[in-house]
Image 1 (cartoon, rainbow, N blue to C red):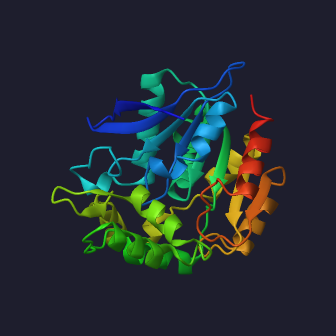
Image 2 (image 1 turned 135 degrees about the vertical axis):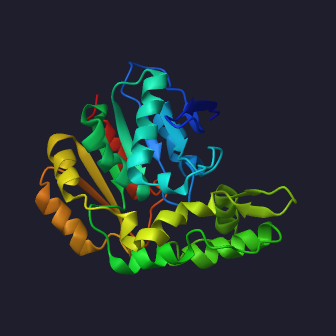
Length: 289
């Protein structure tokens, strides 16, 4: 299903990019804003976004600043959840969207929680994909270890090998074809023809400056405000090393009405087109205006 290439401007004059999937026929429903993880981009939603759009919702899958087709920031210290959240508000203002359902994977979920402090009325409902207000140190250390690190890639076969090396713990059943597709989503063709990672390595500067915990600020108050006041769905990869079963249980205790789904055999983070994730998303969205 085709999408429109949309651009908007941040408060510090960056040009940012989104895939804008028009809604299918039917009554108007609230749009979905899909936000990817730390080193990823809008291509992560290339399967689930069109499916949601076909159900009658506009879906804007964004490239967060420094990723994909969005501008790289001249000041790497702006690579923070609060700034990302303000970029999302700019998108909403420039596209005339007052309220939306937010679907955030990993860092995208942190941005969604940050929005509760900046523009809480913008959030009609939230889908948090394998992320919480607290994370496991093992997963955090794994992500921090490779984020922003240089990698020598000569061709797309190398890119697929790299994708497998970094992510095999999360997707143990992936085939060679799956890893090739994964590489196409996370690399782009560089100026010399070889694939390069499709993000600014300087996204790791704030992490190096403040330590890995800079990836996840203290968000329990924001999570409680979100999940107690807005319909919320938590999706967890059953073998996730970032969102442990214990942390998920704490989240469910803090927000008893929150919906929950687990994707078997998948770690951090589900791609959301898995049957368990997809089913939970559509069941959840059926109850949202």
